[in-house]
Image (cartoon, rainbow, N blue to C red):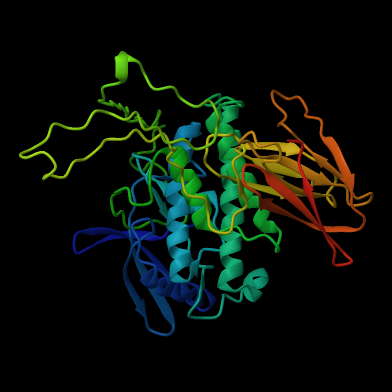
Length: 424
């Protein structure tokens, strides 16, 4: 049987949706109203008013024109990047306020005709200023565990929407954006392991980078929402492609080179600063009495920030650190995933041969055999490691920067440490 929708009415010229309840429903609505009053955000349904007479609670929520993600036709990969960047940023902002949704589903994400997202359905939300709702499985969760539930939900919703996009042939399986979205979904799913810390802001930052947006991009302050929008609302037609324009970047270097030649670029992937020693600027006034300035070409890369506490290494040789992590026997780095060893084997990543590219090192948990990889597997193939030595009873691995190369330190269960150089 279709669910009864909240009644709609106009209040002071504002189209609102009214939710009323008594008894157990009143308790749930009261918690939802208090949460919405605390979580004022352009990405959250707006609470217009709340009336509580102890027996019945009435919420008036600003109406949002659009359709929820559950009923939304599939979106392409770039649209999904932008939509989930907004959703993840809203949840990250709520987590910072001490609010976790804890029950996020596709029906709680409303998209307007511009594909801007508004969240609703906060009846099961956790707040740091009160005990979590006592409705079954959630009665023992704190805001920290509530935030973990939100992270897991985002990953599974994203995975579902990517699959729908592929089924509808709006995106291709090997499309870089699809690969990156699956990578983010996998990272979110790591939050199912209580030992892993995956924060919503980390997901939001990755999604913003993929969509070409930032957390500070302006968006309309849409108020309102409800658990399921009624059929026939405006904006219910399929949205065909959100246009994402990449800005063209033009760099013009004005300098005069000796004999008209160009500077020679060092082929090494190490950071390089070039000084073409240009002729001095013409003097102003008396020679030696005025300051002069030089324009020096700097080829150092502009690197995106890496999340604090994340494992990092330059796995592609571009001079910037990339995040990497390992779950079970899967190693993920630079938007790719690799099968490596057994779950109990020890793995880390470093530049072992001084070529500027960090690659894995593996220590067999049973034999203590130490292996270094000099390259990554490409195009569905594999890479073979070189045996270095054997260390009995290995416990943990550490990477030490010794200058041009990294060195591997193996700590043992007996308290000893063994430092091993790579293949350079």
